[in-house]
Amino acid sequence: MLELAMAGAACAAAAVCAGYQSMAPTGQWYGETFTGLARGSRQIALTYDDGPNDPHTLRLLEVLARHNVRATFFLIGRYVQQRPEIVREIVQAGHVVGNHTFTHSMLIFKGEAGIRQELLSCTHALQDAIGESPNRESSNLFRPPFGGRRPAVLRIARELRLSPVMWNVTGYDWNAPPAAVIEAKVARQLRGGDVILLHDGGHKQRGADRSQTVIATDHLIANYKSRGYEFRTIPQMMAESRFVTGA
Image (tube, rainbow, N blue to C red; front, side):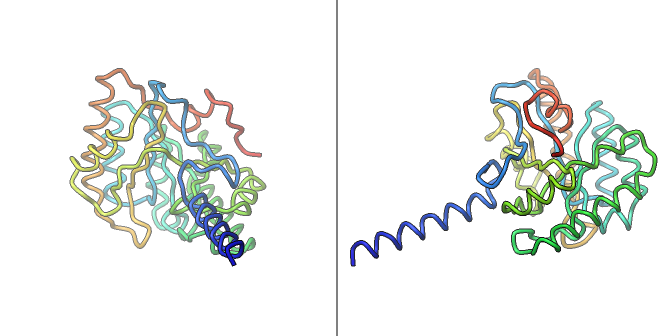
């Protein structure tokens, strides 16, 4: 009886660990994902999920331009189809765009055909929007919605030559808290070499209010630049790491 109870407890613990690893931003059980550089680096990557979203993506581009900072945007394919001109503005400003699936589905609950369709549809939407831009290759980055992945998700992404990108710092801005709250949450986690997760849109519908994220971005850049940090895109960070892009 005791042995059965212990076995049951072990199985339950294993299930909890497996579930945690499927969602944990820095978990690597199910395959390698890029989460930043070694601690202590003076580089930071700003990343934004769930756009394009007007007017806040455009306001964010203005802030980034004022600070001469390049960022990485993980875009939802159905929004890309609705507002391709914003995607072109992102790319023309020197920023990097990546695949955030077509509908922002939780991929751990999808079959392999569904996973592949979500990724391919978003890739095609990005390619159509960007056209012949010289920065077109930047759409080979992929971030799973909610961070959810299992081995099949990462395998299919790599088969499609997409490089999985997660994060190790988050501003917890999806519920639009005040800018000062976003800044404080980032400050508590940041150690250098970090990939910061923020949002310029919302996955439920376009039009999410991200004005506080725009303000927080302005303050974060000014603050960390004054302390000697440099802001980089994800591909620039990857180039300094041993992470293998594509597959």
